[in-house]
Structure formats: structure tokens, C-alpha cells
Image 1 (cartoon, rainbow, N blue to C red):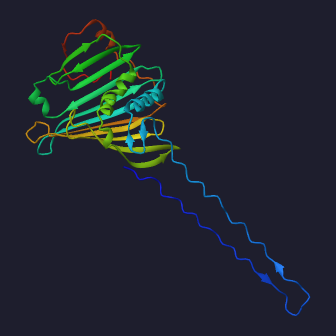
Image 2 (spheres, rainbow, N blue to C red):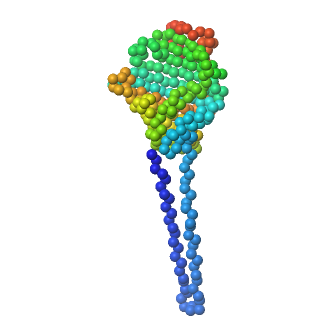
Image 3 (cartoon, rainbow, N blue to C red):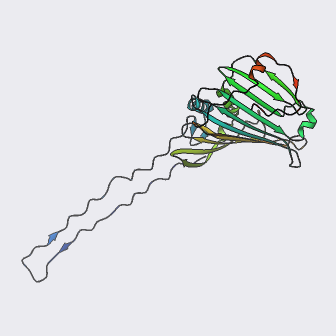
Amino acid sequence: MRRTLATVLLSVLVVLAGCSGVFGGGDESAETVTPAAVPTDEPTPTPMPELAPGVTKRGIEDPRALIAAHRSFLQNRSFTQRSNSTALAANGSTILRTTGTLRVGATGAARYVSNRSGPYFATERGSIPTRVVAWSSDGNYFVQQTFANGTTTYSHPPGRRTGMQFALGTLPSLLGALDAGNTTITDRRSENGTTLYRINGTIDTRRQPNTSVRLLVDSRGVVREYSTVRQAPASSAVTKSITENRLVAINTTGTPERPSWVETAKNRTTATRRPETARSGE
């Protein structure tokens, strides 16, 4: 818990008044010196930078307000979001690594590319795609998945999917699962005139045991970065998992290019075999 601001101490200036005489002139009277004015107003304290919606000096207390501010700021803005996820075995070796890049244009069109690698694929026997490309525009979205054996599938899932939904990802559920009584602002700094807050916390143990969270939030409520670290028992295949997400290029991300395979995905959702892992049409 943060301590309140220390009490401002006021130093009082005491001015001594005295009389002075002129030697040798008995008829000259003493000159009276008027005391200087004593300041009575306390110095104006430095204002506390404005905190993000849902955030107090104690940490995150209203996750819904923070998510609403994050969503509102990004609406109608272009941005890029980068993500990394690493799964570690008991001996500390990386058994699965996932990287992702999401680009959202100002009009809402979004393109997401994710790549996975690591020996964990051998145990899953090809059930996890090594590459996923998703495209969203006008409320429709299409997905291309490529597997280690070269098989590629296309899908056009029903329902509405927007760039904002891609961007939010698991952030709403993550913040909703925070232990509100155990979040703390650990650092504060200024960047290009915007105040940034580093906030640490833990997940409610009933939902995700042994999971810590770290966020970088600005005073407008934009979650610039967030990461999680989750510990699992040593007997588990994955004993530690680390995820990192970073928001960059706000208002400077160009409109993402529509993948060439979207027309195929509109009409076909069955698997097709390609001679090599698809990397065109990202």
C-alpha cells in the first residue's frame, strides 16, 4: 500500500526590528524600522498526476472501468500489438514458443499472424498448428491454419469478430481475475508528456493458481504492456509459462493488407495439403 504524502513543513521567517541612532547628534530621533511581512501561505503542493480510470493509489480497483477506457482510446485508431508466450519444462528448457503480431487499421480491419515452435509439438502429434493467420474486416473474419506436416485448413467462423476483439484478447478476463486487494503501483514515469504506471498484482488463486501479473498503464487508461508468469507443479509437462503483450505504433500503423487466401476461405473449410509450410499471404 502506498503511504500518503508527507506533511509539508512551513518554515517561519522571524524578522527582528531595531533602532539606530546617529552618534554626535543629540537632537536626531531614532529611525523606526518596519518589520518585513511574514509569509502566511503554505507552498502549493505538487499535484498528483491523474490516475487511469479504475486505478487508485492502491492499485486496480475497477477492472471494468480500465478496460472501457482502453477500448475507448483505441477505437478508430490504428495500432500494432506484439505478443510472446514461452512454456518451460522442469529443467528450464523451452518446449513451446509462440509469437504473434496483430495489426489493426483505423477503419477496423485487422490481421493477426502467429507462429509456434518447439518440441512440444511431438507430444501433441500435430494437433497444434504451427502457424495461424487471421483476417477481420466488416465484422467477418477468416482463419488459415498450417500444421507441421504441411496441411493447411481454412475456416470462416460465423458471428462477428472485430479488430478490437482481437486486440483485447484475454485482457478483460485477466483483469477480472485480479486479486483486487493485492495490486500495487510500483513505479511511475513520464513519457512524451504522458504518465505511465507500473502495476504488479496476482490472480485470484481459485481461477489461476500461482499467477502473477505486471502491467504498464498510462493516465488515459491505455494498457501499454501486460505480462503474466504462471508456476505449475514440477510434475506437469509445463512447469512455468510466461506471456508478454506490448502495444506499439498507435496512430502510425498502416491499413493491413487483405490476405490472398480469403476468397478460398469463403468457400472451403476442408484441409488441403501443401508441399511446404505456407508463408505467403501473411
